[in-house]
Length: 92
Image (cartoon, rainbow, N blue to C red; front, side, top):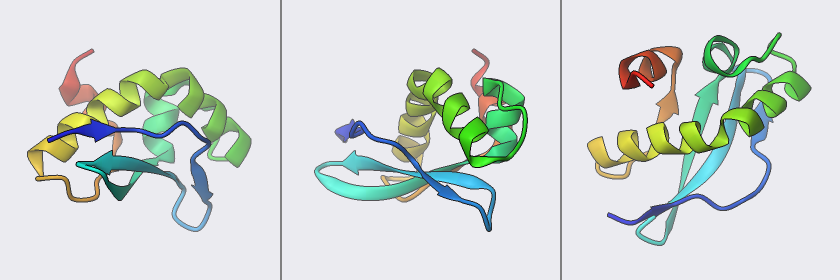
């Protein structure tokens, strides 16, 4: 399975307090997301406000992509939502 992530800014989903972003899995776009809680707990977001979440995403982009790729591999390339617990389990 080939997983890549296009550069770009994630989309803020204020109704659900998450950022949405795209992963390309074997050439197909798959929508993924990371929760505000995960960004606060692991990447230094000080609040669930859009600008804070986007800054935290940028700080953690490499790790977020790594954890996302692992999750995509585990679920055969279906859409994933990254929660705080996934980063604790990842252990890094």
